[in-house]
Length: 264
Image (cartoon, rainbow, N blue to C red; front, side):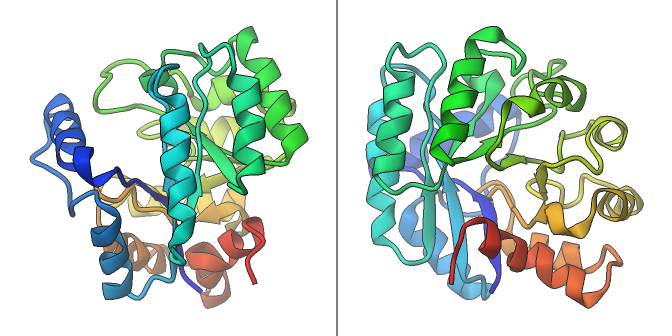
């Protein structure tokens, strides 16, 4: 089984507008594919990937519930495993986490820059603790972000300080810290945290990726593409070129994710 642990989709009515505004903010030409549900599922089938985790982000307290309603609607698709999200400034964030768990969603996604918080803030600790009590998987955007030049609110060093707050699984996107991979080796390699490969195709040097897999361990690496921004098939082929043995490649491409998500 091959699983892409890091994709994004939007409701059809806003998908084109959402990705266009993000692309403009990042200075990008545009997404690799359209960010609709149907297009993502078609792409998964085209590149022979079995399932994808669809990560949703509550960008404000006001849209939090709607974001999670959309996430819940994605459970209707066999190929998709949707995650919800809460906004730290929402007064009902803890209650919303309970609603996410009751809806059968397996995890939540945070984007510190997009949501206006640093991972080490004290106000996040009750949220982290509630996530752990509910047994939810927690995914963070980690490292730099093209829209927020010069700042990282979830750096490897910052996250290493708050990792003990979690007793449920944590996934740090972009191999633990986009463009901060030397710091990942220094502060996070070998610790109990998963790293996904999202948006590293063509940006992370192959020798550095191979070193990180070797030091951190293939058991804690997950295939991720960051679709629609990058290609799913390209990321799967990239992993096979990092130099680990076939068994470890299978783990990264899907076996680790299958176990983490408790899939048959």
